[in-house]
Length: 296
Image 1 (cartoon, rainbow, N blue to C red):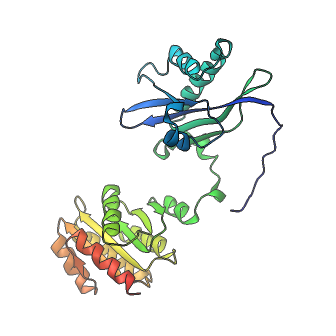
Image 2 (image 1 turned 180 degrees about the vertical axis):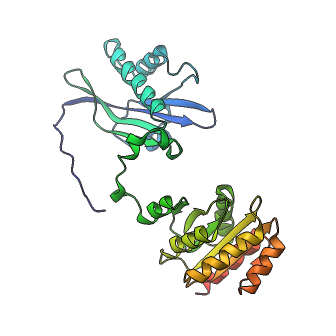
Image 3 (image 1 turned 180 degrees about the horizontal axis):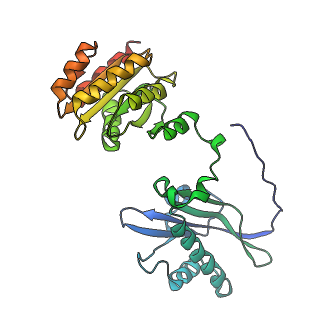
């Protein structure tokens, strides 16, 4: 890892370290505030090995994190009464920041109590919901592009959802849910997906061409699976987009196409005329692409 910046801060005389975090509790559909007297360490490790050391409180969807809840967390951590008020104020402020900034995570680790009896946030982390960034242009300006994958940035500019993985099977799919299912099918067939890629509902020639470029930029990709379900978008239109894209982009690895849905038969005919065979089922496509990758 290349270090681009170094942050230097004054030393602190630490009396005690705590963890304080706010996260979305999906099973309960509520915002969860968590705290632990074991700060400065990986909270996942604490949750796994010493779950009783984590104090939790669910915030009310309408009223938010109430002052009494924040105080209860402080007392549960074993804080003296004189320090609970300061802790509770920080907890409520962290919750308010989480909500105001459309965050998916906001944590202070460690939150320390100094030997002078003061509260200090020595390290903090926030993750934001990308879908809400249009409401926060100030946050968008804080992106450190040097810390992000260049291929993922290129995909983002093209309006394609792309996440690079460690496998050898490139995936080009229309629809996020179908993309997830495609990766599962590849793994079930004995392969490893090289990426998550949702080309979008239209799967136009330009989008497909861009998708090919993104996938083949990874030298580990040994075969590509195109999995398209024609719903609102017709299968023959998608097939024409694929063939047009292939006429403009050099793809040096085998391609397996699964095409289903509206006008799928016409789409398979278009692909056959271009020298591509499209299978009907996802399992068949996954098995075929894994076999093609293994043969290289």
